Length: 113
Ligand code: DGP
Image (cartoon, rainbow, N blue to C red; front, top):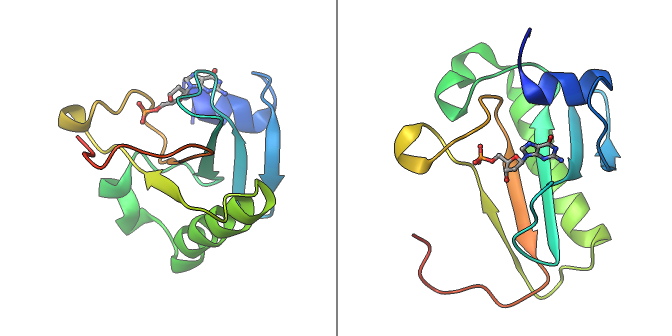
């Protein structure tokens, strides 16, 4: 998708710190980490957000969640972690390519928003 920042990361046009990749997903460290571990998991297929998942296969979506679990384990987040997907303007989504934030490595606040 032209002009999509995360598609440019996927193609290598914009560099990123890769954490994990398979045929369906790519994961990399957030440029502005909000915790000791802050990783973004994206589907390789361009989907704008969770509102765009009618265009996704079940495999595209399931692989994102499988990657979350695998990365959490590799990043030693056995004590817990938070997974966030901002969807739309009220959630302050800033990059319009579906992504899941994995945030961990410290105690989170109970209040989520
Ligand atoms: P959201 O607000 O949910 O759309 O989150 C977008 C995230 O993307 C935000 O936490 C910062 C991150 N981000 C933006 N630009 C870049 C970039 O060029 N590289 C990396 N690694 N992360 C980026």
